Length: 195
Image (cartoon, one colour):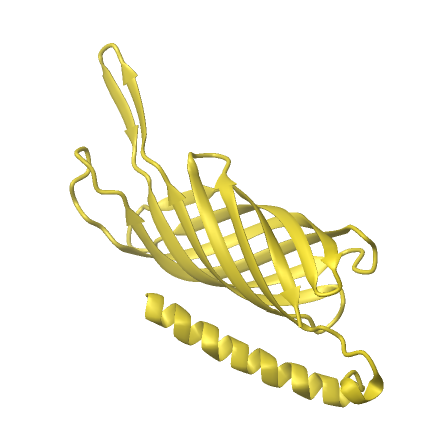
């Protein structure tokens, strides 16, 4: 899976680089016309799960055909801890695990020229789910999952090429061959470098 993510990431960077050069040549935003528009971006983020105890990390490569619209390809890792509740007559156990996925995302900013820009986002992707192995669940499982998510966020420019952002999402992961269905509610903060 890691090798596949590296290959997809390299291909995405190549395609985005060629697309940006072609777009700049067509609309006159290249170096010959003065300051170039920064259409490409690299983003890194980390956050916490709201519905469960856990964390998530992501890295994304983006291309902005317009100031309001950004297309991103992202690789994400989500981790949820096991939840155990003890009672007088027993216990309740919820199994955690890791989800790794690659997704395509569309982000729309409502006020891209203002100091604070509000945005909505949505995406879909594929990956794997690996539930935790412990004394209650000794079996090692790996499932292929399909992921769909949506959310909203805020972006604030820090420097001419650097933005900070915070967003919240609802991520739904499902596996067609079983009854597995997971919902995550991560809130993340990150930075985007535009070039």
